[in-house]
Length: 253
Image 1 (cartoon, one colour):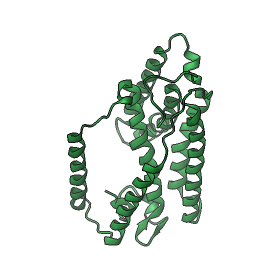
Image 2: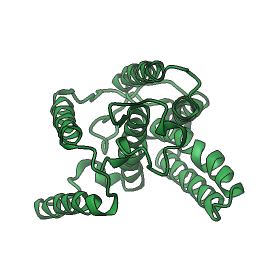
Image 3: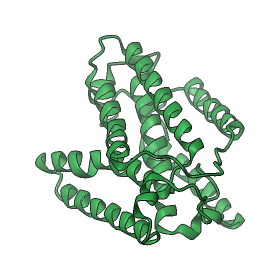
């Protein structure tokens, strides 16, 4: 599942096939991919489901049987990956990945859940959307452009940026994000792809990407309208955050 971390011939690497490669590992690519998937493949999809289906916030999505099924599918995908992407990075590299996953999973269990008792964060969309947009923009160009001659410097800057964003968002989360504010951050982050990168890809022959981007923008606007309609008499307070906790939102994840 992480062959691109090690294979120098992975088709998406580009400059990163050599920039940041050391001891058989594509270090800059690995850091960039870990950040990308943590945000866009895990966090944002969960929040979008919760905003689209508010009742899902307080429910366990998968039954015990379904969890077993999906665990089995994950193992199957890993096994098939050995045949679909025939590159052997070595036992040490694979073992290191497994150990890292276990360690990070253990650390994630130790991170306390931020559950504010009030929702009084007063930060508007004019701040949240550009802030969200800055995340993929900065990381995309930082990690793929090799602007810093020394790859280790890129990785250090990337780690500092991650820590900076995390500290800011954690501080705001303690004051309580409203659903509309969460959507503002996600709209900015996804806007980099839907309103910018998808159109660039279309110009390079990736037919349909711009239509996909437009469709996703319309979807985000629909969610925004849906949230606002839940508070028809207090649109502004829904955007800035309310002092009353939302009954369907037990906490900010």
